[in-house]
Image 1 (tube, protein in one colour):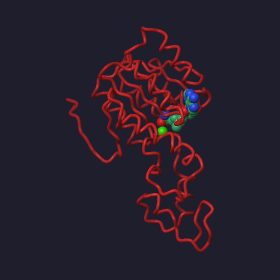
Image 2 (cartoon, rainbow, N blue to C red):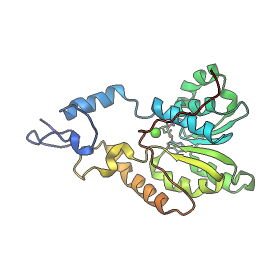
Image 3 (cartoon, rainbow, N blue to C red):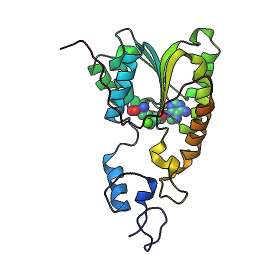
Image 4 (cartoon, rainbow, N blue to C red):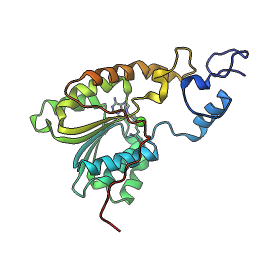
Length: 227
Ligand code: SAM
Ligand code: CA
C-alpha cells in the first residue's frame, strides 16, 4: 500500500501514525474523504455550539473575531450575543465574508457585526495605541494565520478585559503536534506546526493567563429556564 507523502509502495500505511482513530486501512481513502467532504476552513458544528455556550456563560457583550472566512463562527457568535452585543470582525478578505453575509442578515444579527477588511496586526496596533480599547473585550476568537498567533497574543492580552476569554482555534493542529517527523502531513499542516507548538509553549508559561486545551470530548448542559 502506498503512503501519501513521498512513501514507497512497499511501506505500510502511515495514517495510523498521525494518531487519528480512523478504521480505514488506506491513507489514500482517508485523504480523499478529507478533500471531498471536510471544509478545512470553517469551524465545525460542535465547536460552533461550544462557542455559543461559552459566550452565554460568560455573558459576553463586546467581542472580536480574527479570521472570519465565510462567517460560520461569526454567525454562531452573533446569535449567542445579546441584542446590543458587538463583534469586531477582522479578515484580509471581504469577498468570503460577503458569501455568508446573506445568511447572517437572514438570521437578523448583522447589526452586531463591524467587519473590517485588512491584516489584523496593524489594526490591533491601532487599538493598542488608543487607551479606550484596553481591557474592553469580553471575548476574542482567533482563527486566522497561525504564524501570527503569538503576535496576536502579545496585543490581545492588553485588549481583553481581566477575566475575559481569548479562544485560539486549532491549537492541537490536526493532531500533528505529536506526529513523528516522517508522518504524512499536508504541507500547510507541517508549515504551521512549529508556530502552534511555540504558541502552546508560551501560553503554558504565561503567568497572566489560565489555559485549557479543548479536545471537544465533554458534554455540558446549562439550564436555560425555558420549557
Ligand atoms: N473562523 C472562520 C470559521 O470558523 O468559519 C474560519 C476562518 S479561516 C480558518 C481563516 C481566515 O483568516 C481566512 O478567511 C483568512 O482570510 C483570514 N486571515 C488570514 N491571514 C489573516 C490576517 N493576517 N489578518 C486577518 N485575517 C487573516
Ligand atoms: Ca479554525
